Amino acid sequence: MTAGRQGRVFTDEALRELSASPRERLLRRLATSDVDGLGDELAALEREHHGQRERYLDWVTTILDTAVERHGREGLRVLVGRTLAFFAAYPGVDPVRDEAPASMVAEVAEAAARGDADGALAVFDRREAEWRCAIDVLRDWLSALLSQIHAGHGPDELEAFHRRRGEDALRGLMNDIDRPAGERLVNLVRLLQGHFTDLVVSEDDEKFTIVQDPCGTCARQVIDGRFAAGLGLAVVTDEHPVTWGGRPTTIYRTHVPIWHVEMARERLGVPWPVNLCPPGLDGGTCTILLYKDPRDPSGAARLPSAAGESA
Image (cartoon, rainbow, N blue to C red; front, side, top):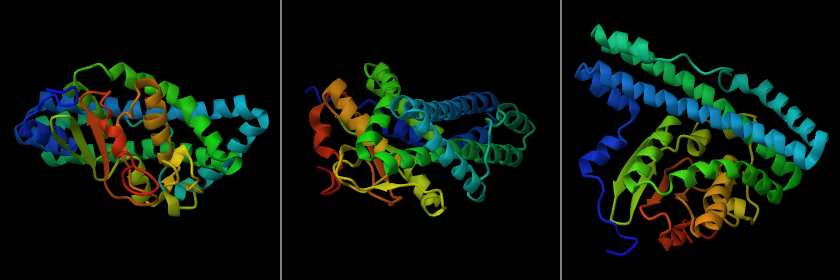
């Protein structure tokens, strides 16, 4: 067996279970009256939602902090003005939630214990909608701030802001890098489902392939109409690493080639993981190649590029 080919980790049945959405898993728990298992799964899902919200709050904070460091008081003032314009427009797009939703675990479990599956699903759907609002507003706010950075200072400065936040983001990934391949996959899938990604996982000897349809961040931002909503979100086309060399890239998505290509290469020698994001305002499928050997060089040949889907 070569370094890149490590054999199968999961059965097909296990991969189907891993790919199931949180709602699908809830339906199965309700069908079997598995109240304890239901509660554990919902608590885990809520931890992922809280984690994503905290990461976005930290990201916004880092953008503002970096603006002061690099551009002083005037740089911060520009972003404060952009923030005011963003929140003036946003209520026409989606409700603004300034706090995390209340936990759904006890309420769903109580309905399930009464045999009220419809009531349990109604609570779940309501809370999940609230969580989408709570998370999406932060994603869109940081996208507006990054759009302002790009408009005012260009792609080099946008990269600098991504690198500042990427130091913290990649620290977590590097902590995960030496875990068993199957554990890394489960952690990533749970994180992706925590920001509302629908996905299917498959496996071959060298890697896991996660097809997101849609991706819960970048693609859903397009599908949900954020670029046509008067929020001033940019599509970046500069020939630059933030766009994989000149591939039209939504402003939020520009962090991917910096964190997962440039910065990952500096730490591992290879991209990690390999993200095959769609170009521009395409809200189609987004595929992640998660190599079992994180240092497998095969992924470098699969990167998106300005000339086509992969280099």
